[in-house]
Each structure stands twice: as structure tokens, then as C-alpha cells.
Image 1 (spheres, rainbow, N blue to C red):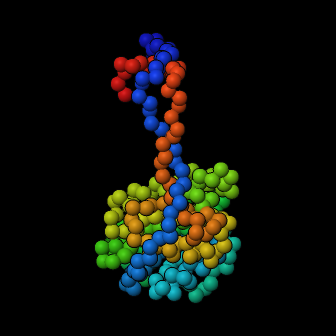
Image 2: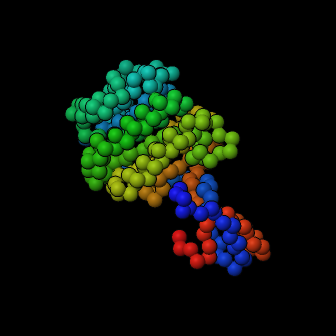
Image 3: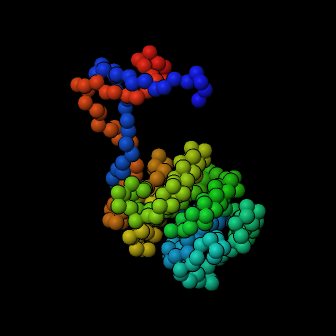
Length: 278
């Protein structure tokens, strides 16, 4: 501020002043998704990132049963510590480090060995350290960069998807008594923003973030993720599944906040006045 700056003044806003509308983000119940029979073409591969739990294995098996060609992309154990045994019969690609060049090489090798990448499903590890979570989030953004062409081509030819899965609270981070750690929400929030942006830029690709409650068992979680992969509604980009499993499906909507009483003046500490233009 310079010496010509003025202190904020107290402006009285009378009851005739039009109120500023305020919106509050709240979860809204959704019906079960419609099921559109469509599968990833056999000429394409699906990259599924490993979150270190049994969810990776069971989801891979479920997708394979549908005919998908799934390759598990594993992060270094210093980033994602495995808590479940990874069967050796599953196709895997291990990242030796978290450098962009290593990721690019791994994705290129997958495409050359297993077919062009037509689907990406990212399972966000739960309770990762802040540094690890940030590194993983960056890699998901980079994956979108390197698979853009093949995913859009797959989508134009029938089906392509870019889906991220979080384990916040099943309500997209809005639960008052959320079990998530203090670092989970702001970092995982980057995934929600990414899929929303991709949904606008990639009209032929299913782009969605699915937030599954940590209290749901693996089988129910797999069922929820598979249901979203077949949902024909492209207007929805974020979905949560609470403790009721597939019966507790929600999304987020902005609802008007109750207006303040209009029968009294409201004192606002501001340098703005009724003639100001905002």
C-alpha cells in the first residue's frame, strides 16, 4: 500500500440493496447409473495404477473377466508401499523412479507391447505422505498428457476412459466427520479438477472421479467402479459412494445459501460504496 492508500470505511447497506447470492456445495443423491454395454476394444490396453492394496488385484481380475487387456502400473515402493501381494500372472510395469522420462518410457513400452492405451484407471493410494501424494498427482497429470491421442482415438472408435478413484469419505470430501487425513483432500482435489477439465476437452472419452468410502469392502468398491465405467451420462464428472455402497451414490451440486434478514441494515467494512462497480 502507498501513502495515498485509504483505510477501509464502514458502508451501510440498506434493505433495498439486492442481496449477493451465495452458493453452498452439498452432496446430492443420485440414482443408480444406467448400464451401457460397451467394452474396451481388444486392440487397446488399459493402464491401472497400483494403490498397494487388494483393490488393484480384484479390479484387474474383474476387468480381465470382461475381456480388458489390463497392465498394472506400479510406483516405486518408496512412494507406494504395497500391503497386498501382487500375483505374478498379472501384466505389470514398474516405475524405477518418479521422473517424467521414466513414466514416458513406461507408457511407450506398454503401448508397444500390449497395444495403444485406450483406458486409464488411477487408484489414488490412501494416506500417502504429502510428498508422495504430490508426486503421484503430478504423474496422473503427465499420464493425461501422454495418452491424450490414443484415448481420444479409442473413444472415437467406441470406448475410451480416464477414471480416477479416491478413498476420501464417499461423499467427495464433504462429510463432517471424514476419516481422511489432513493432506488427502487438498491433494486429491487435484484429481477432481483434472477430470472436469478433461471432460470438456475430450468429448469422446469418459472422464470421471469416483470417491469410494474407505469403509466399503473391496468387492463393493469394485462393483461401484465398474458401474461408473458403463454409465452413459457424460454430464457427471464426480461421484461418491458412501457406506451404503452402490445404494449411496452422490454427486456435488451448488445450493443457494439462505439469505440474511432484509429488515435491517448490514454493516460492511469496505471501501466500496453504492456507486462502486465490481
